[in-house]
Length: 414
Image (cartoon, rainbow, N blue to C red; front, side, top):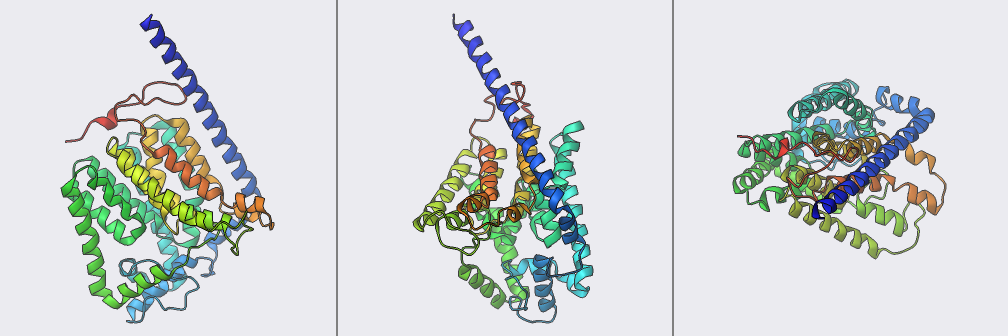
């Protein structure tokens, strides 16, 4: 009788997993069809943003280049006349300072090529280390290269590919048992983007003290180095800009507080549903809960938990542009490694939805406000799929087939 009960329960789990996989594949296919429809209207504009010589289009890189040029001549790094405020630390300006010796458009072309090489590089690194081969390796790589975050990052000249490389390196080094090296790389990456600071909880809650100290040391050392080289005044000015920056409700900001402000406070980018400003604080609170929950659950599955903390960090941050989704691609590749193919396909398909999506919803209506928060929903969906709800070794299943997932990730390397 007990055997029959177990057989019946196993059959039900297999059937449920099968249905879940089919649904995820269908939703992913729908996202791709939607993307094709949007690109049919705006594809030439997307490619034009990358190829144009108008530096106003490459707004982020133009801001970086102007700060690098100011550093070259000993001027204020954060008062350069750029259209956008530079919210990146002096460390980033120092790293890209050689590009200030070039004409802005030439420097942008080189930066774009370096970005593309970096994306291809960490994708290949992930596929090799995670043993993702054949059709899934090719499919996932292609989907990443045509994704909205990659194309948007190339057009604007953003930092995200290099941040992702830092996260991948820190994660894979820890995976190989190179704790100190992993911590140093992670610390420098956090120094470049302080919104990733919740990642210090990853070693802390697991009692990995050597990893924690090397992370804190790497971040503090990189920040001190930048302060000494660029001047402490530049560091203080950067901190002032961060503290004075208001919550940005622009539709490309996918963070939960931004979505709440867009939907429940009066703003210039959308017609809010109603006036409930306290919900912005609630959103911050929910973001903090997401961070704490992700960090706590990472103790049972450190590999997947790392990427859940990255996602939660973006959820709670005041600013998390849609292109930040690039930072979560390695976590999706881990799902592929664990044979959760349907979930990985669905997430990669969501990332293909073009940055021109908001252009469809320019009407001054409440429905438009909801549609403009699609990117926030996509970010939360990524976090939900990356959250390690099962203990390692609990027999994860392939949603499409119900077959046991590979347990290779459970073996700790020497």
